[in-house]
Image (tube, rainbow, N blue to C red; front, side, top):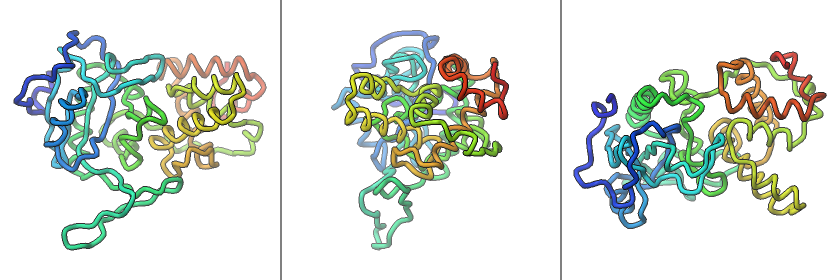
Length: 310
């Protein structure tokens, strides 16, 4: 097992709640998290106190610690969750935590009182901080080893925000998803080479873009249920939650939860990139996108300039 060579095993016994035994064949996802702790020491205490756990933790210096063996025990890291047709992802996934404070409401200062570099992203009042390079590289190298070992396609490497929109924000917009994919093969990030003429898509409304986000695997059931009963307040809130979760992963120039034009362009590029992969690509997307095409034949013809529609 490659992962055994890349991490140290935590000296204590696996936490009491991680007792569900299985053989690893059930693993379909890797879920990336951050701890919001500057070091790994408080994490173990929190795990025991709160009844939560993860399979692995990657410290800011790049050290990888194994808390729960994914071949033997279920870690309680995902909570109420859904992605690409799977719910309750604790059973279906490997949880990988990353130590560090990823955002603050006010800028951080070092011990000399100097402001630490952070970034305010449009659509958010938080100050967001980069992951240390050592931690990022170690995470990518370790995650791709997990993908290889458990035969997990890149589409199934997700964040906690992806699987729990509105409830969780990690692993945050400062994770370099494109670099992780381009340099290490971790996860999936769509090509940016498509030139989108937005005039071609002028008839597309918010529900179309929300449907595409659902095609990528996100849970759009809450806003759709609210729409069916004409609960506009709940619809607007839950729609914003899903859009913001998508933005934090794939469209980080604005994370307001609003379908700004930059987000619409990124969604369309994402659709085209996945559609171009064809039947050998992301099977969940293919199935859901085909359903959208059947419901929207006239609008679907707009994609014919970019990908085969049949």
